[in-house]
Length: 114
Image (cartoon, rainbow, N blue to C red):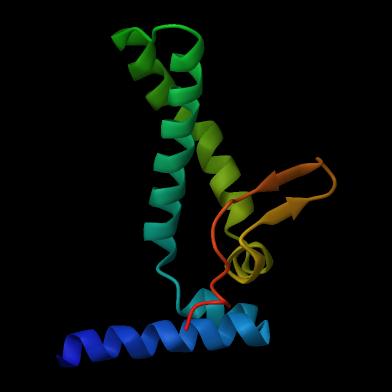
């Protein structure tokens, strides 16, 4: 019960930091290595799914994409993991890169969570 209670309190603290726009507190309350690993996994899975919609992906090609694509996906994950981008993603559910005219994210806003 204490474990569940501490997780709930941590989540509430994160929601409070997002609502107030405190990027430093958001970063302090985020497990950055786990987020980075999750982003890499999601980027690679999405890419493989999109390629597979057009044509079959051979096993050797899948290995090559996972090996070399992870480097590219890691660069994208690093761009997404800035304090400002994480705060924006949690607050609005999207991150917009105006310079490259790209929008990332399609998740529910954490601010609406109660």
